[in-house]
Image 1 (tube, rainbow, N blue to C red):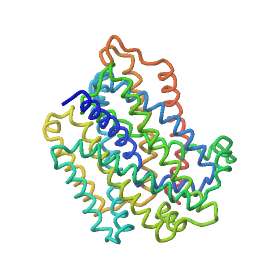
Image 2: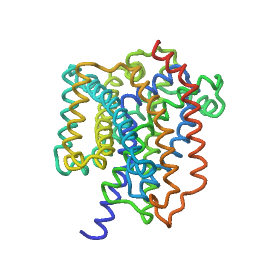
Image 3: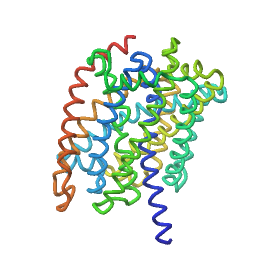
Image 4: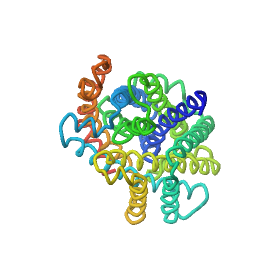
Length: 404
């Protein structure tokens, strides 16, 4: 392979890692959270998106840099800090990933239903089967890189079209993004939920772990690692903003969203039957890419802790997807649970980020010649404090959302 081919291959991995992180975040829960909070906060939701985006960027830069420079996965960094801690972190993230994946299977099935009219119960198994087929291949990781890019671009284009159709009040959005006119206390729960849904739990580690699997690590690759992490957050942010605008155009016009499927009803009301089909495309793409991301990353947290998982990684990923499918088929996952899981992943975030920040100063983790930027450490500590504060203050909002 020529240097040119090698460079192109590495760029595809970097792009794939960015889209893996972004599309892992952009799942059915992402769509539900965005539509739900847009419906309740209207233009003020722009402020929530702005704050959560800034916090998410701080998290991503810290996590990806430390993982990339050290060449260690999140659980291995935790175990170096305190033996046994990695097992606790891996368990928390795997459980959170499983909860999200159950919703992802359901979301993919709803996508098939909206797009093709396929019965939802059949759709559960079709969704699971598609995810399994991808990981049966020995070149699964390369397929994942390409697939998440293609489906991510499809989502961007479709949501952009719907945003133009619904004609949101852009001027008012700009104002309220910087000067909200609701009590700040009412924004705590949405901010942490969005943060948890964008970089909480397994999501923030998905791209970094993908780069390690591709052999991209070390101080020499730091610039590329940073670029990939920023690309990932940027893609997720653009989709979030466009989806917000698409839904806002509908609720601003006075329409009421269906609480059981807020995003789907917004597309249907805003763009008619074609909007319903568009939502099917978005939900199908969002669900399938998140099934891939959740399964891949959750298992990646276990494979360095258990030799059997390392040896049979693909089969454990397949089992993870199969189990999620069965739970979804027999239990189900309502929209409010998807919002709740985002909040709970936000509660895990200060734990995992604290581990990364502590690891950033350890020579046995990052090496003797690496100095983690002080500004990233300071901002990281602020994010840890804020997420703990928002988690405590956001509990009443979480309870209220479950009772609604």
